[in-house]
Every structure is written in structure tokens, then in C-alpha cells.
Image 1 (tube, rainbow, N blue to C red):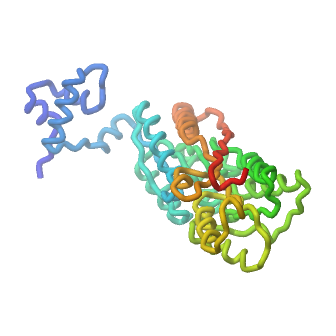
Image 2 (cartoon, one colour):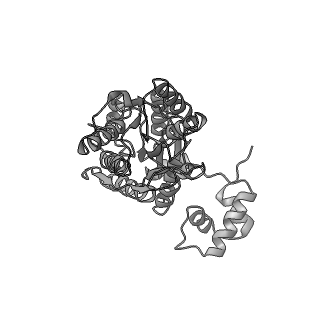
Image 3 (cartoon, rainbow, N blue to C red):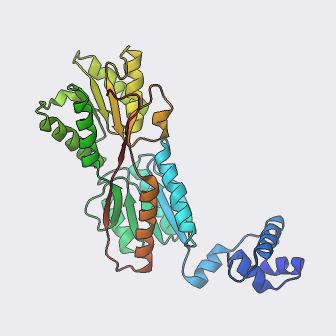
Length: 336
């Protein structure tokens, strides 16, 4: 099969091949907008496919950035990708997206794939706090910088952008206590996600501030999914313990817990106040709507991209750990 070339497009339009080449390379400074549009439309019509491998070999640069996320259930990660793509596109970069599905083995495959695609850097939210740390070090040692976002990673020597999980957990539980809650269940996250430790610490220290005894029976593993959250709350309620509040590690498990509580005829927020961290629009699509700590996703994406581009431009640039402030959005699930 004959492949369409730049020369074919130039002949079709009766213009120089250098003009076609500039247009297909996105050179808006030297090609008029109407010419750019005409060349692009003609290239699509003629089935032109750019030989990226040859281009990359010539310039020793792929202009590709990899983004690895752990899941696509909540809108947070998709929003992050959207804003990261916008930021990177302004600097002439394209993105390759990979999803680990909360599986460290898939995460390994994703990292290998991105290395094979010769990405110049990686934005990453990990699915396990320590399973692949050596691999992260290996990737960065081979000249591919990584910026971690949302979930904390220790001991890698890479830049990181996230919210202060401890502080936001503390403030959220404090707000629940001030509203009258005393028997607050913490629907905890999996042990392999390091953010869970900070959120649990915030919960515990908020109780201590108000001299409320810490009871480990009120800390239950809620997993990450709605199904896991529902099952955890059902098991907890079978013990016959009193409850007037629930603080969730993340949105999806909290929504599952909410559904189970309502199924068991608990009124929200009259009987049980509900709050969680990592809230997205999903919290607004249920009744009653759920109070949540929302992350500044646009700021997180923008800063992550800029830190990565700085590392790409200067491999010796100092790494940074940026802590952002989340926003507690009060909704109907919160007793005031």
C-alpha cells in the first residue's frame, strides 16, 4: 500500500513541501491559519500519516508525556488528565494515558509501555505505596523524570503534588464533632495506599482534641469501591454499636456506605452525618448530596505539569514537594 507523503500533499495543493512540512508540524508562526487549515484537511482526506519514529530519531525527542492513573471510576482523575493535556499542549507535548486499575502488575506494564514509547516524562498517581518503588527509581535513573500527584510516595527523590491529607481529615472530623457528632465511624482506606495513614491520623487527633476516646472498633476497612464500602458498614452495624457520623477515606466507598445505611433505614443527616475526602461530582448526584473535601484539580494538574517540564528542561533541577489545600464543600449529608 502506498503511503501519502508531504510531497503528495504539496503537489495536490500546488504549494511547496516546506510549507506543508511546517503546517503539519504545527508551525503557526510561519504558516497562515487558512493555509494551515487547508493543509490539515487535505492531509486527512488523503490519509497522510506522519512517521513519528523517523521524526523522533531526527530530533532525539518524542514530545510525548505519559500519564498513569489508578482508576477511572471517579471524575477526579479524568479532570486531572483534561487539564494536564491542556497545559502540556501549550508547550508542544502530547499525552499517552494508561490506567493501572489499582493493580501494581498493570502499573509495571504501563511503565514499561511508556518507556518503550520513549516518553520524556511521566505524571503518575500510584496504586501501591511500596510495591513498585524500585521500578520508579529505575525509570528516573534512566533519564525519565516522574512527578507523583494525589497519592503520596516516599523515598523516590521525585517531585510530588497533593493535598495535605492529614490537615483536611482533621478539619473535616473537627467540623463533624462541632456539629454534635460523637460516635464517628472512620471508613478507612486500604493499608497499601499511604494517604490512608494521614487521613486516619487526622481522624484520631481530631477526636483527641475534643477528649473523645479513640475506639478501634470504629475504624473499619472500607476499601475503594462502593461495594466494599457497603459491605464494611453492613458488617459494622451488625455489632450493634451506636453511630452518629461517618468519615470516609474516599468518595466511592462512602457512597456505598451511604446506600447501605439508607437501606437499613438510617436517615442522613438526621441520624448519621456523612463526610469524605476526594469528593467529585458523584457526591452531587445522590440524595442527599454528600459533604466532601474536594481537591484543587486544576491547580494540581498545572503545577504537576510545570514541575515535570522543569525536570525535562533541566535534569539537575531540584525536586519539589507541593502541598495544596483542599476545600470542604458542605452539602445535605452534614448535620449543622
